[in-house]
Length: 273
Image (cartoon, rainbow, N blue to C red; front, side):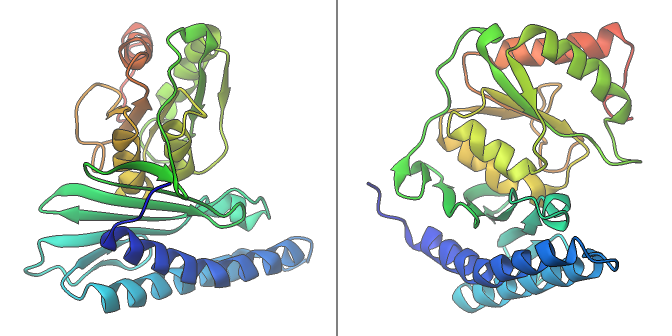
């Protein structure tokens, strides 16, 4: 059982308040999904509304923080050394189609370093959270990355880049390689939850290209505090603003990264394409 910190308390309270309306919105989407009009505009409104609730709640609690948000970009940027990085609905396409696998993602950054993260999956009421040097948790239970060491027993998650984003050309060759060497690959449609699941030991690894900072910021620190490894696929450390991310347990990191990079080099691929 863990007691949350003041910073996590602020993030959790904002996420849970926004989630109450979001869950009601999701119920409406399930009805709209079968209508002729479809839920597209409604989901856009839900995204914006959720982000605005998060913005107001976090601003009220920490007026000295700036913001980087998916829908409204940067706010309160001048002179701030701390900021929130927010994705109001990570897994929007799932939400759009009535699939209950999406999350609110909030990270706290200080002077360019991630210091805390919360990923809240409201349908299952799972709150993944971590603060630097405190550890990683789901609700109040401590989590650790998987201890598996054998690649053939590993379950790996991934995501498919949208059209025009980096990583499309390399995805299928990399997928074929990973499928041949592991026990399976899953693509569930939420980068934040993929990272949270690596932290909780549900996956041994996860890779994806073409993401944005708000997709991965909270997950990065949660994986790290759970004892995992996070980098770009090429091993570099600019996951927030680079073109790819790889998260694994410590035992399999080198093998999975080499496997992916061997495919890139064999096929003469470019991770930026």
